[in-house]
Length: 227
Image (cartoon, rainbow, N blue to C red):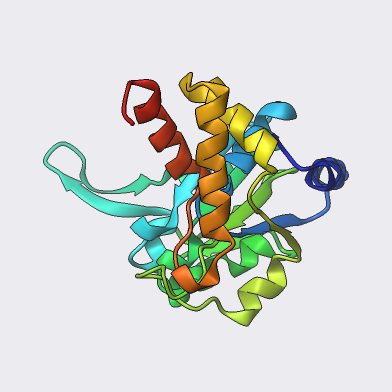
C-alpha cells in the first residue's frame, strides 16, 4: 500500500530520471513504516535494477568503492565494491540505507555522485566513477534520541537531496488488512492489534511506539495460537 500523494510523487521521480535529471530522494519517518521497502517497490514497478548499500558497514571513505586485498595467487589487488557496479548500471535504483549510521565524514565521498556532477574520484584506482543515465538515489534516515549510534547529517548532504518524503503509519483499515494478508490472523484480532498500536502511537507520554513491523510479528504469533 502506498499513499496516493506518494504515488504521484514517485511517478514524477520516474519521469524526471528518464529525462536525465539528477534525482535524489530522502525518506524519513518512524521506524517500521516502509522506508526501506518503498525504493524496492519503486524499482519493481518501473522495472529497474535495485541495489541496497547498508551504510552502517562503511567505516572509512574508501569502503564505498572497495578494499585492497592480498592473496598468494594474485598478490595485492583491489576488490571492487558492488556499489560501483550499481552506479554504472543505467536506470539503477540505489538505496543508501540508514545513511546517518556511518560517520558524517564518510558521506563526503558521495557528494560528487549526489550533485549535478554525478561522479566521484576514486583515489585507490586513480580514476573517476561516473553515474550511468537514469540512476536514482534513495536515502533513508532514522532520526531521534531513541536511535542509538546515529550521527548528525551535514547540511551540504541534505542540500543535495532536495526531494523528501515523510513516511507515516497507514490508515487503520489498511494496516489491519495487511496483517490479515501477511500473517493469516483473523480480521477481529487484526483490528484489535491495530487499535492497540494506534493508542500507543497517539500517547506521547509513553515515549514509545509500535511499528507495522512489530505488529506483523505480533499478528504472526496470534495466528499460531498465542493469546
